[in-house]
Length: 115
Length: 109
Image (cartoon, rainbow over the protein chains, first blue to last red):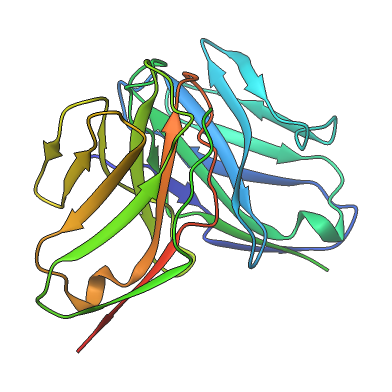
């Protein structure tokens, strides 16, 4: 069964460093998403991406964040200058299309720890 | 998206049916009810979704009341591996999923 994959599974970085989190969505899916979950808190939406453009973003997704689909398979989340409060699980998701009946499938996540 | 209300926690005996309720009294006509679960800190796992009719798949059944103001997720024969946080999400927007606190289901031996 096709699944969303994410790398790395764990990332430790120093405050102020740039990190890139990578995702391979399910092939033939058109919409891609990033969510995050700070330890002990809810899963929060960050951004959605379609046709090489940001479709929607939350107030969390500020100028420190960017997303890209550099090739036909990868979808990346870049945090330019990490802060302590960026420590969280980051989940990538994809869906076949955008309608409210289109299911989003999540990857296993990347645990980011900023020291 | 409509707000949902779920119990904070529930217990179920292994092998018995687990019935997880969700209230969504402000749901509107074009909003779908989705259920996901999250085991530890793994990625949320899709379970099932529906609009008006009851739905069943290999994982669970979804019963939606006629007025659509509440629903119940049924795991027919719960196993220890079904211990997880279960999220009921009402969704109209084509984009984001808005997760609440969910219900911590604990399946006991």
